[in-house]
Length: 557
Image (spheres, rainbow, N blue to C red):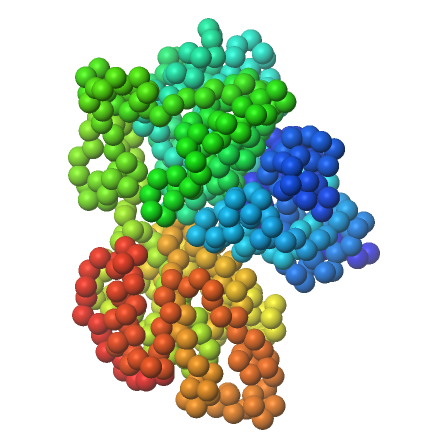
């Protein structure tokens, strides 16, 4: 009997599956087919007319997508091999990702984190109804993966029982006194007896956000600032898209499925922020979009203004009601700076217990887990530069440094893998996984690997960023003719004579990075000069702060 094909879920896909299976994404019962996908992009509706602003899709590799057909059953597994569910495949299609980015995010610029994540996805979308592998397995998986406060829609609907208004509050950030004031104002608007559902997204959010485990400690701490039995904390395993106004509608529809009657929408809901500071989407655009669809939402929107601390009244007030009084605030950038430098943070801004937790969580960019990934042709100089960088960082950075050289990894971690595309991708996946573990624990991983394919490099970046690390791609852009002239192992000569096949740059492609943080022309620069250039980039990105002596190369490569 033939076995079902298997797809290993990413962190985002794991969250999507949980919310599909538990009814949080109702009316969806599975992943969108091409018709629904197109309808959601164009009209924010399913093809049956139901309002649904965000496409929920299952992306897979090109190889898997081309092998699937309607009627197949695709098994969905966690990364450890645990089966969680299956898809009764009804459609498998090749999406236009730029079209999706423009419709959902309003931009195709990969500096937008949602667009970057979208463009890094697999090349095919699989559509079909999902089923749980079995109830016990799903329950055990949730107990292992999610905090103990996690509750499904059915559990929360039973808890509320319709006795009181329920105000849901979405967040991906730690909570401070301003958030407490906003939620209390929301409770007042909802009416007597209203209850607060503190419903933070704990799936993948924006790279650089505070890890969910620390945020959960913050949320538990702030519960004491609400009257007893008024607020309930229940984390939501939602992977945010950072899609601004569209996502605000989506968040509200999801909370309706959890029994909420009201939903708070602020000034910049689900906004990723602009590179130059401020908001990416227009202020209050989410409120305006919600208002246009209020009659069909099935949940009441609570639109709140921006709040600031009144030094006169010594409490948070709506800025529109300040009447010229002195206001105070601390921006997110300033808060991170103070946390990183261990400076005092006033108690009017945040409860002391919250600041204590955040000081443990926030190390600052120069103390955060870091992966520096060198990619380029064989003999381009990757290993030389990576080794020099590792020794330089060891001499001047407090973080532990791990050097992961592609040839060494092949010998130990990836022994037995061939040089087929699938095995090359698997090799890079393994290196990315190890590097993500180094980053998770606050270390530095310096990787030197040809890594010729964009998708594999993007997958490695995703693993590192999901682990809370900073990923910096360095393209060592030595031309092919220079690499072939160097040819220290004689591999180019063998490839050109046809003695070996599938050799990158000769008869197998090298996909040049399109958005590398640093490009080094190592053929035109001596290694110490190239390394000095890279150190300047690392300092500019805030990844390192010290200026250690650049250690010279032992050899040219």
